[in-house]
Each structure stands twice: as structure tokens, then as C-alpha cells.
Image 1 (tube, rainbow, N blue to C red):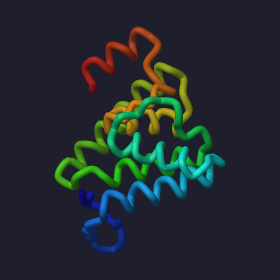
Image 2: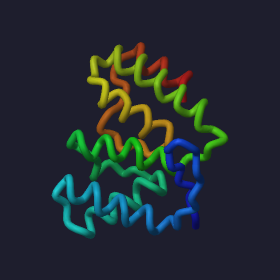
Image 3: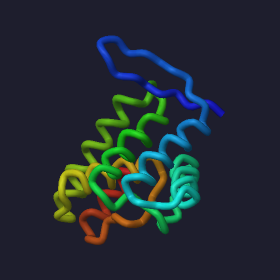
Image 4: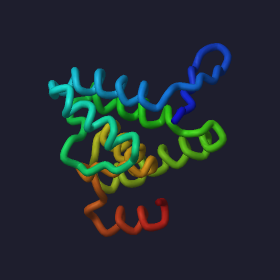
Length: 137
């Protein structure tokens, strides 16, 4: 029930954060930005951090999208952090270019896909990006 939260400063520090605290943090931040009710925000946080990602709620504003990129990544292990970020960048560059998405849309797609959340608001719709995702995921 604990997630590892990596604090980036002059020295890397590891802090064990209760899972419920990450859920409430996400609900407060994303819900405020999106203008959702508390129950909608809490539901979004649980669905996101458990990687269910139904797709009925997803960040649609730049600030909440950036927050989700960092928030979802904070739950990944440092052991896979470097390869994970390389895969995120690769996916964002390739799929984003093929699909014609903005940088933030491409980065968001990669993070949501590789964390297995998969909201469904961005997906490969062209044959080249579909083939890439078959190999990339």
C-alpha cells in the first residue's frame, strides 16, 4: 500500500508515500484544475493509479495533463526509471509525429500508455503508428 515517490533535488531522495495519499493528492490537484466534484476527482485518481483507465474522465487541460504525466510517473520504480523515460520519449517522438500531435499530447499518450492506464482519449489511428505501438508496447 505504499508507493515510492522520487524527489528530484541536488541529491536523489526516496520517500515512501501511502498509496491513499497519492490518490488524494491527484484528486485535489486534477479535480481543482478540471473543475470536477470531489467524488469525480477521487474516482479519476483511483481509476488512474490502479491503471484501470476507463476513459470517462481524463485530463483535458494542459495543467492537469502535465500534472498527470509527473504524478503517474512518480509511481514507477527507479530501477526502471531510465529505460522507462527513454521509452516514453521514443513513443512520444514516433507516434506523436505520425499522428500530428503536439508535444504535450505525445508525451501524455506515451506516459498513459506505458503506465498501462490507457484512458482512450489518445490512441494510434494511423497504420504506421499502430504498427509502431505493436512493437513498442
